[in-house]
Image (tube, rainbow, N blue to C red; front, side, top):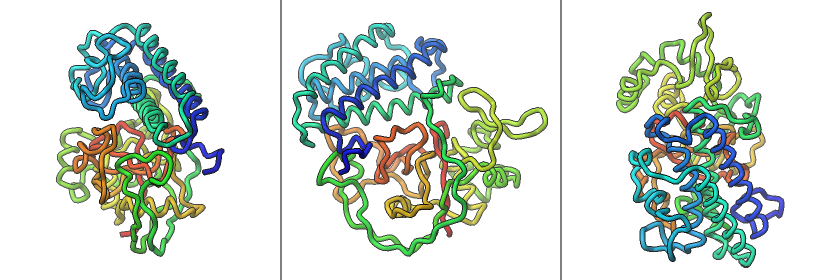
Length: 399
């Protein structure tokens, strides 16, 4: 692997240390913005299933790193870690396997200052231990796991800021590629190695086992569906025509009362705008449509006479090196349910994948909020079909 590769998967101790510092700096900056908006106090926070109290999220990221690195946990099960948390009652507060989501608003947590001190102490001890580690994949696995976990929670905090209408500083948010490539790319199909490279580096358990996978010929959009293309579906009455929606999609429509994407609004003159972190901005026609559920992506495809790509097709296109296949601006819904690959076995973080097989849908790619080190054409993100608070979009395939 080239020494300049940004991926955390192959990073040695010195680079991991820099990445851990960077991740913690970003997490704290996001928390500070939420605290400034008054949301460090869980009592002021709406009880939504799609967010966590920010103070809990901050403590949880440090606790997770402590659990797997400093306490050398062999799994995420209670009792499988060495010693006690550096924070009294840390296990009782921040173990997501034990603390139900609905109860996190009522926890008697320490104040932000105490949680920051805990974060500092955990990171300091991790960096001290990391400095003595060999450049060995087995020894570095827990550090890479903790880094990936914090990066994912950093993006989740940015989802929270979008949901609550809290504006982040400009340096906290990446930029979407513009303009997007037009047209579609025809692939002749063939075989490729699907999944992560287990010979070296870090591999998420749901990417295993890497194996040859054959894909039939297909044609796929070069870029994501744009606001302009999706607006045509909206203005053609797509949200009112049940023919385009699955049974689950129609139930979601009825429950959500949605008539357009989650953050679309009309101004006084009837022009469409969208909410970005609480502020109204003009709907840019050639920008990718974002904050869509799986149901909306599927309905658009039926209206357009297209379909979502299988995740194997998406990965084939992404690893092909085709210069016109642009990805990384938004997470992309696929047609594939989240299921294990043949040969799957859970890793030390037992609850990362296995509990969610069959109840989630795969998204591929990355978003503008995903750190470069976490981006990989093999990464399998997964959410429930109704989630439209995430930075999600989609592209289509020929039927």
